[in-house]
Image (cartoon, rainbow, N blue to C red):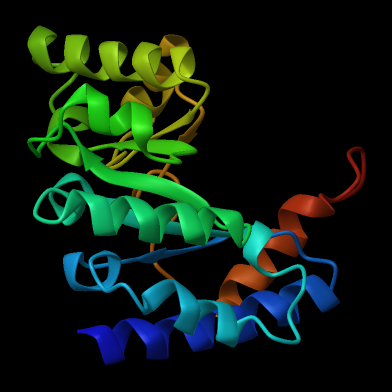
Length: 200
């Protein structure tokens, strides 16, 4: 798992550098495992990868689940702080499904909370799920974090999340997974929309 994470990070850093050179501001997020954040040498290995890429870290997000820092919290805390000091944004993935206490959330250098899709998908039909989504949005904002909703699979859910003040979202109603070259086409299309008034 550690070797896989390092391999993915190398590829992500190279891709991020390529996009920055093309003046494309697309943020890449990479998931970290419990083995990564509880490895005392991990942050140093990532730091070595960044040699020659001075601006890349600030355009990347590293995601860790709540359970990822529960077993060895002191090591995980030091690792995440070191990664944040390198310029990475830190995100708590699948928030609401783990067992972390608010005291850990207060200590961790977290920039972003991601609401688990199990709550997002049910929020229109289940008031309790919507209450959890709303509470998480409020909590994140009160702690100075951005909030991301996972599992947005309909325009209605997307609209409701906007009304609740959610900052960002991911899911099939936003875009499906795609290769980097297709994402570049989509990015350029949205950055340079066709002028109105012409023949479609």
